[in-house]
Length: 280
Image 1 (cartoon, rainbow, N blue to C red):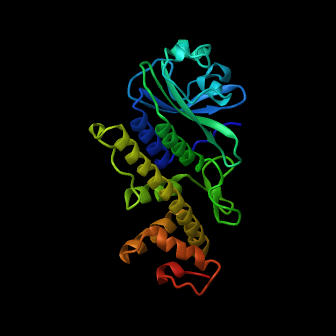
Image 2: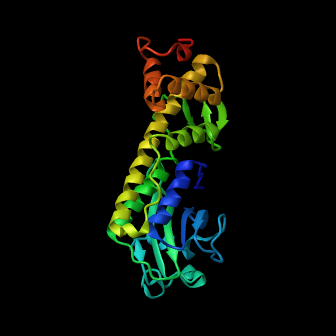
Image 3: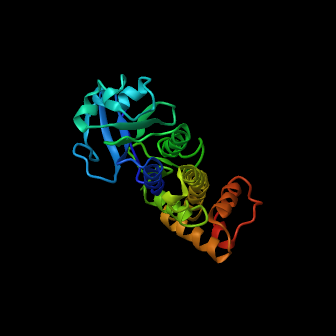
């Protein structure tokens, strides 16, 4: 199975948050098939030969493969670690510290890993790994169906999105999430290192919760876009712009108004602003 990773502000936010959380030289999302490992997305604080987006190699030569075989989620002495020392990539890349957690698709199958590596010694505690697992769950939310059976907007088999049978690309979804993240659901700024590691982890944990909230709100907004698209015979982008404009003019939150639009699809008695009522 090939990993189809959508371009989303949330995934960029996950990578940035993971980098702040771990403090390692490189944080990456590794895609896995039965035979290969690929650096799908790389967030690097320092250049590292052999670690580039799109770079791939044999699955069995990666530390992530060993992780998924049951090795500990973290080591700060990879060369001498009985699990990671024999792995080819440990010596090839000069890895001293490694941490990783699995990323699953909607069926529960592991298709990737969210990891950090460093050429120096970096200790990672259980609280940090727990937050990293939450971040992996945010990525997982983008890999499967966006909503349950029966909704209007869903992922297209070839990637991107479609409304009914009409492909829309990934633009509308990205616009929705970007709008949510830029408003009252935006994650906080990167914590100051001087606050201490526990405070930083706590603040990053809050950022993860806000990302998860934004993802849940995004689902409702995209359902509403689908309803408006079919009801008003418009494009998804036009529907989103109309929804956002009406919400702002009435002092409403986009996701709250979206919930009412979705309800109106099955209950005509739900009141809506005239601009969004359209055809029933």
